[in-house]
Length: 164
Image 1: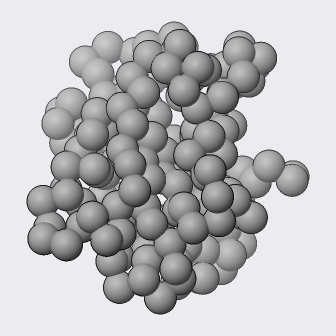
Image 2: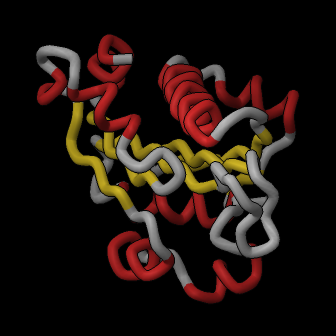
């Protein structure tokens, strides 16, 4: 991931809800991470997403906090300039469903100021397993994005883009 960030002239920023900082923690454990890691925001509640990242209340009301649209807007809020690669996570780790969303539903956003995409996935397992699977999926999508083969993946799974 660091190698791809360097090649692309990007620094990683995270907006984490379901993962609660697990992505930022994994990245900052690696020596030299400050060269590639810009910031990590744990936006665990609705007001944080709205006030810190600019997610609109209308988007939340229309799609819920756990949606591809909210994950997209969380990334958009991170992208303060063109050198940022933003990653966002939102979801329900359990043990109970939340706001009409079932346990295991997660949404991951990835992108930069010129192109943002988000994915909806369902993971099974304990709360910790779902969080860990979400973290790993976020890394997977970040690598695919930086390798520029995310378009190929989107053609396969048909995920949300703002311009659709």
